[in-house]
Amino acid sequence: MNFFDDISKQKVDFPKIHSVRNEMQNYTLNFYQSFAVALFIVCFFLGIIFGNLFATCDATSYFYSDICVVTKFNFSLMISVWFIGLLISVVIFSIGHIIALLTEINEKLSKFKR
Image (cartoon, rainbow, N blue to C red):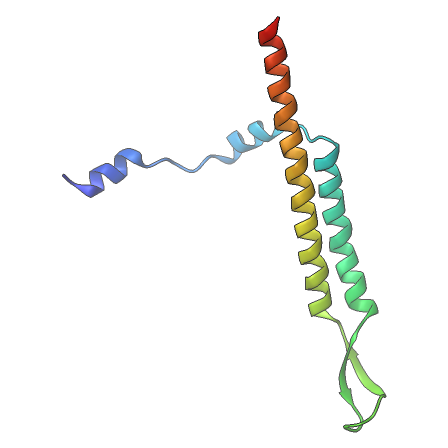
């Protein structure tokens, strides 16, 4: 019993780009899935805008001063908005995918009943 022979028998090649593209052309997004993609794009740009609007203070003139001498881009806020947008988009996209699967099952069952 050679483990390398077993591995070579079970080995599957990576899908080619052409086959993945053909498979994705047949897939249509429903309203929830397209809304989730659009929401993620909006959150991406909102993260950049909020990171610039709510800049962080780099250095102050004195230790106990409220005056900000240099402001920098707020990367932590940008990453937070991106992460929250990604989580919300994934939840909405998964709900849309579940709805798409259930409608497909319903169509197959309605064909079966006739």
